[in-house]
Image (cartoon, rainbow, N blue to C red):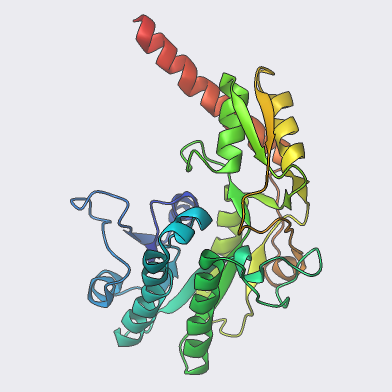
Length: 308
């Protein structure tokens, strides 16, 4: 079994991926600045020395750490670039300096495609990001591609709209809708007809783990792979699904689309199926219901605490 460094280990995908890899027998070293500086997993991906020390003895570096929010990236473009591009540069530098020469897997995003000209999107579609976050991910992919051409063992994976945890950022659309559905409240639907490919984090973690196993087995020539269901869901449909599965007390409020964001994306999962035998297994209804139930349990526990 392998020793692996996982940056972004405290994030939505990082936590799920870590569980899958540990269950498979691998040793996973966490690395994330979202935890306390006193935590053994604490680290800043912009530090090649820090990365190198933690990656010593590792066969692979799974680089998930990033400024992963479009809104935060737009508000703080310098921070976005320093983490999303500078961090990738540091990871590649650290990997090159280690005698083990670990592979580097970069977690990229469907935002690199921008507003796609054709749907569903395949991995060979034009890279044409329209916002700060997407441009940072496209630049990160270029660094990884150049490193591969220079002889490094690298891989790119692209994620779509990943969801599945009630501990995710509360203003992301799925947590916001499912929380409102469970507790009663407003669902702010910003762009009712905007459509996306909502992929459960458990499916994403399973697919990424399969990719890791292929890289550990020596695979060096895989092209970029995206994990997507291939099924579009409009934000209006998402809100109605959550409303139906929840208490029925939530109220939908339609608002204008946020500027600088992609309005439509769903991906073609054929490459992931062909190369890795991967397919999404968690339906949107199952994923939403689990989150609604989770929010309801938290609310009930809080109410009981107040009564006590």
